Image 1 (cartoon, rainbow, N blue to C red):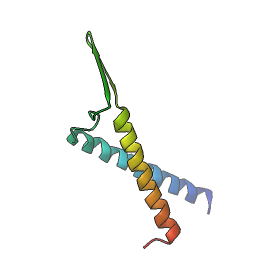
Image 2 (image 1 turned 90 degrees about the horizontal axis):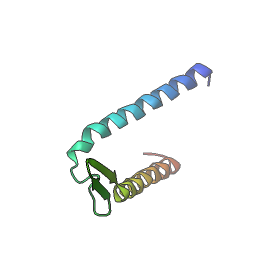
Image 3 (image 1 turned 45 degrees about the vertical axis):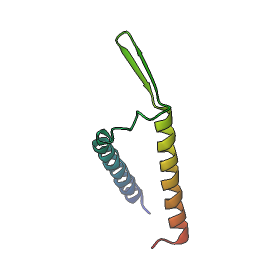
Length: 80
């Protein structure tokens, strides 16, 4: 594979990742419980509000790990 071909593949992958991030930014405001799960920490003081979404991060980590595991399993299996 030539250098230009690898650069092309890398740019396409970067573009796909940007599209996925954009879709996530559009969808997340429509999920009202995201960031407000039991176990997420909210500290409110005089004019200051701090969110520490521990449980939300754990949930997203588990979901992403599961998705990547399925993708890895699917590609090792030989695909469709």
